[in-house]
Image (cartoon, rainbow, N blue to C red):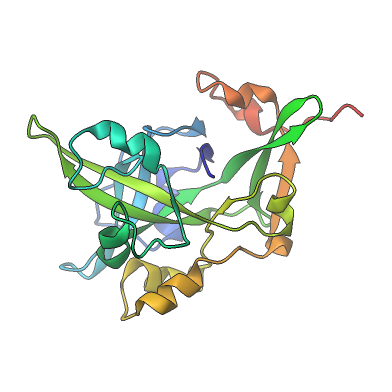
Length: 229
């Protein structure tokens, strides 16, 4: 699964990397080294009416439009690629509401004899990572509209398999347009995008167990630590 990420890049950098037109609103979001489910994150969506991309703040944990309670989102922080096109919580979003979730890295915990050791996983070149996401609109019983998202996961590449049996889908820039729906694409082509990212293009390193507590949120969380033998 993918249950913790870092997004510390400036919003202006995110807009530049993901080709968000300068005139589109720039959301106010603080850098975070420890983003957890239910937290807000900026995501990239395609505005078909305007014919351009937008950067909007959504809540992590997809709440289907038919849900009766927002708590459903806790079970939908991730969407498994396998069967995504038919699962009630995700099938309509997969067809019509796909997004990119920009992060600097995600975290995963490796089981060891001494306990669980967290690792940071990032692109080898240090660039922003685009995770495949699905988004949804939900109206609360009180009439409030809430936009939320889930991160799509797949089987791990060789690097991530050392840590966990799942990894988020990382999309290369040349696939962003298809995933966002900027060009015609059929479900089979979309499913083909939900593959493990090449290990050679990624890197990982052990980090402090402090990342396990959401109250800890500072740059020291991504500093490499030495593992005791």
